[in-house]
Amino acid sequence: MATSNSTAIPAVPGALPGLGHVPRMLRNPLAFVTSLRDTGDLAWFRLGPQRLLAVSEPDLVHQMLVTDGRHYDQGKYFDKIRDTFGNGLPVSNGAFHTRQRRLVQPAFHRERIAEYFEVMSACAATMAGAWRPGEAVPLKEEALSLMLGMVARTLFAAEVSETVNAEVRRSWTTVVKGIAWRTMSPTPLLEKLPTPGNRRYEQATSRMRAAVTGAVLRQRATGRSDSSLLSMLLEARDAETGEAMSDEQIVAEIFLILFAGTETAAFMTVWLFHELSRRPDLATRLYDEVDSVLSGRAVTFDDLPKLTFTRRMLTECLRLRHPGWMFMRRTNAPTELGGHELPVGTETMFSIYALHRDPRSFRDPLVFDPDRWGPEGEPVPENAYIPFLAGKRQCIGDGFAWAQMVTTIATIASRWKVTPAPGTEVKELPQALMAPSEMPVFVTAR
Ligand code: HEM
Image (cartoon, rainbow, N blue to C red; front, side, top):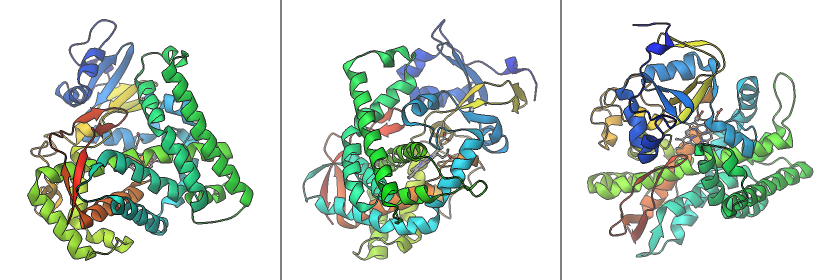
């Protein structure tokens, strides 16, 4: 029954003095976030001094993201990312976020994705074409490098993309690890110490920033308009004020597009081949579909909707292996959630990973079953499946991501049978995103 008393929200048991639930969180983060619903649809927990409200019920998450989305900003987790990369879309708030969203959105329209598609398809073909039969292929590394290449080559004109791409690749791992560590770190003091790790992180972020800034300045100086995403961002004007974005803001947007668009799609590729390796029946269906749609030729944009089983496999990977295991929001106004009054500054937390594994929403939630998305599948409760989120912060790159992922899977599957190296066990690693562990594979020609 609704109440206006926030103390009525239950507290997750097992908090230790001073530490709260940090030890449980560190021991097994994914099990911890998934267990929060056992305490209640809303439940308080503590990470050290920080009290957080876990929201574990799909309709309440919808209320927070959509119905009352204006009352929530990006939470604490995002502050560190903003410090490093600037105020790009995933971390900005309020009217500034709305304005930026209006400016950036056209670069992700369907017609634009159709234009970028040729580059995506060529990148996938180059990767799959470089593999040799019987050769061991580090699939996760290859998928990351491919997705980074697809995003970088879409962002920048061909002649700059190679230089920027090379610099981004060189610095990538150090920067991603540094960010993951910083978002989790209990005190900002640790980041300021002159340790070798901190120095490497500073150097890598400066190199990446210099490379991206250089590309923006060069493109602006040429005054040339081309089909790159950067060119669109430089030309974008606010419909109300006629204002353009500053170079600094464009650099921030580019940085975060590179981050948002690389790991997510790469991880789905790894999970999909992991599932195929365990289920030869699904592998046969996927290979049959790819053969009948493509008949040996390269993937085109018009093929994407025809690859229905491939999409269903990815839809199920996005359910069971969603990379977003922990998201945070912060109330910017007093608001009501599930009948409780939340004061300004309440930090909330939700997990797409946990929502997608909730037995109240999905039968046998831990079973990988692409047919649950087919004509025979049970209806999924509204708001229960949100791989790209919903509301004002819905992923801007969802169409781009589908194009990246479907092309990659279809291109690989049309040429190669992929078998994990003996003894490979792919584990879920709760880093900044939930990542698969390494997956070395052997490829044989089909
Ligand atoms: C399978 C792939 C992907 C998944 C599962 C995914 C998921 C998400 C989710 C859940 C959010 C919301 C984060 C939050 O507000 O806390 C988001 C935001 C965002 N994504 Fe994606 N994403 C994917 C691919 C991409 C790609 C390919 C791009 C760009 C090339 C991209 C660009 C963005 C941007 C810019 C935002 C921030 C939007 C805003 O706050 O207005 N994403 N994504």
